[in-house]
Length: 220
Image (cartoon, rainbow, N blue to C red; front, side, top):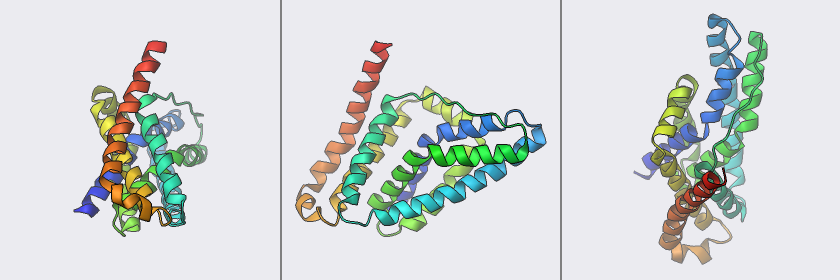
């Protein structure tokens, strides 16, 4: 059961946090002929996936170092709040050739995937139950086709049903709590308060993100 929850968390994280990356794919290949546009999307996405999996697996290994999981949990809380509070605008160079489009897609995806990498690595570490690599690879394999070929559909769902974004933030908050509790150096101190910490962080990121979003709307 825990394994399936972790898989669901990774898939949800990738769908929510890769919306901008999906738009990058569309923009980078926009000026190409239709046939080459499809090739750019496929090859650029495959290259980006390879880089992303490598980065996530490295990040997962680093999270086993004492105190790193706790720090990673704090970073996940920041990402969770940012996910609900911000609405980012995406800008991207539009390529004029197939090799250039593939290069732009890969480079932009790697640069923009820091949040994704940490969120997915943290979710897999916090909820994967010792199956982190399996959770990461299967989760990305399921979610990436949706990201690549359904970017605009994903973004429309997020705009129309904000509850999906808040659900993602809650999953990140829960994963952050589990990461912090599992830290090799701090587990002995945090484990007795596991349930309280997980509930507080799961609810807290949603509330803080919502309040910041409302303040941002009033300021504009």
